[in-house]
Length: 140
Length: 377
Image (cartoon, rainbow over all chains, first blue to last red; front, side, top):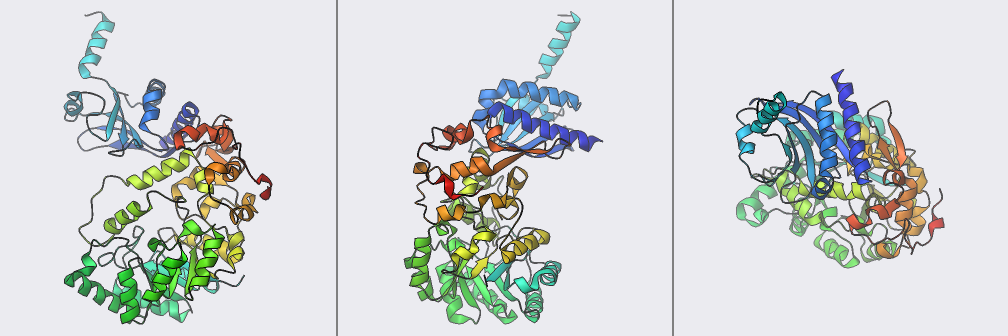
């Protein structure tokens, strides 16, 4: 059942972040979502995490998040942390598959914080993907 | 110990019936929010009972020998109550509550204490959000007409101050036993002012996130000592307050009725076997993170009664945290278990979080630990 898988993933994310930080964090809720625009993905509501933690352990967290996302068949093309605006408190980590309408909003943004409440950990630009695909197929 | 328990009521008719049918003999009074359209409160509202509901529920409670208290303890009304329109509106609402036969009204604003004492039969109760933490403040409110004062929990473990307040006033003193907020909380004023507007009369701010709550939770996840030294009173320890009061208030009107009944049972019997977090009104999120066996805290009150509360010089609560706090891991899966907090922080103990919480310990329990033997394991 998908809910059992989600329970395991919730616990696994919690444990992996705890192991990295050597202190408790709590994944209070893990949601899979589908929006009317076409965006879809997963939200990990987390407590006990700050932006500093992400900045220090970004590489390790990303590697784990990518692995989890692919196991759930959610392409890890866009991973970001949602912050409480004006603070360093992390409210959630999102894996989002952007729809064609929302993609340009983020793709055109510069830097890691296009909005005060968003810290981009990973954004796969569609050109990048196409280029990578061509490189792999030897067409470049 | 013979005592009067004020217990939370979410506000709906079924909730009241359940509370009374299951715990009538232990309840002295219920308390619930009024309508946020007139005056806000210090909590989110599960319901906004109209006057007709309050009248019916008051009749039902009285028929069962239970008193009724309405909570209107907004810590900020934006000056509206001092305008002619605001005054008339609030005065009319208070009159309607009075007409329902409500026994007491909890308010935080001195103006409302005086108005209720002067103009109505129901009695004004000074809210915990008036922050009465000294004999001087207590006397001030009594002189305004307060019939009861809910003492600021920050002095729950300062027995000298509690006795001084008791000596200073004749009115009833009430202790809120399970609030669970941070000791000397830096967010307290701002957070309750925010609540007062967010759950008060229109216009209500349309906020993105409750910064104060999120920050508070973050602090306590990083350092569970902040849960241990928050000034809750365990059911087993309320007899220690016998010389100060016999009136105790259980917080939690945003919880389910079963949760409230569990708390009533614990405080009525002055004993609880289980996770202390199950009794604390706030922060309810953390009951799925931490397990603190209530009975493991037996005897801690002996230290706290004489505690100077200079936490940087004392390792008592640190040591207690290391020994009693356990963390849920694998929650919701077949591998769910509890591990000691010190294990999660990699054996580094409390000092593992010292740098991130601004605390000053350099070793697990701190070099200046005192009186570790005061707590029986």
